[in-house]
Image (cartoon, rainbow, N blue to C red; front, side):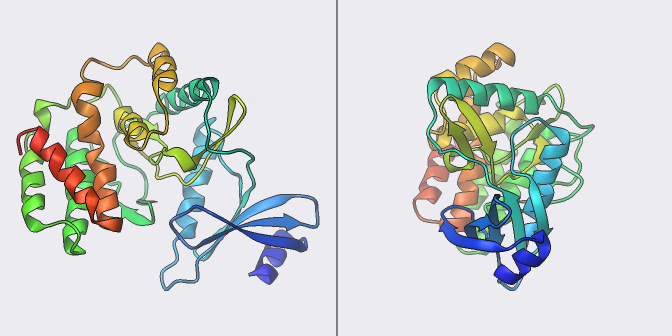
Amino acid sequence: MRDEIEAVLGTAVLDVSPLSGGCIGQVYRVRLANGETAVVKADDGAHPKLDVEGYMLRYLAAQAALPVPAVLHSAPHLLIMSFLPGESHFSGAAQAHAAELLAALHDISAPAFGLEQDTLIGGLHQPNPWTDSWLTFFREQRLLYMGREGMRNGRLPAAVFARLEKFCGQLQRWLAEPERPSLLHGDVWTTNVLAVGDRITGFVDPAIYYGHPEIELAFTTLFGTFDRAFFARYQEIRPLPPGFFEERRDIYNLYPLLVHVRLFGGSYVHSVTNTLRRFGF
């Protein structure tokens, strides 16, 4: 790996140290002879997909002002990015800054929901066919797709999937079409956001597509990434219709829960069933 990094970047590697994080391959911090520091992801598996992450980072850099690592090299087995300083601890002011950055991202739109290509979330395939209806996209390409994947891999019981399928047939009771599609980072949870002091320095490990901003906002509450300071500032910029915290948040969080079911099974199945039960399924 060291020889390939040196050949690609045209400078010597002085030091390589492991970093935590990332669902695909191994992650390293690399100190270079030219004085720069890079982050390297390497995947020596049978079907490496790091080029998809490179595509997503480049897409965000081209379309939005969201701070993301610069992609220095992108290939299926090797991704080299600029190093962004920061830690995943957020003051109230940093949360407000995150809200401003995500609100600006959500102002970027497209003619339909989805993306020009499929992407990844947590290393899993994420289908993004262009779809005119958000409810159709969310039902077919998020809930039912990931539910079937969980069932196919033996982590979601067929009986629970049947309940999910019935619930998906009634989504219009609680959800409405947004005014327009919004560009989403897609995986905003704590370790994918970096801050220094009161400023956000980076968003990493994206899972991009055009969707409803509320699915992004809901996910920030699932594992406690942000709290009141974030939502107070976000709603000053992009007010949320009534009912988000009371109902829609839990519905949208079914998708990341199903992702976790597919990856880990176990207690996440109970979280899915609890949500389904809450809505009568």
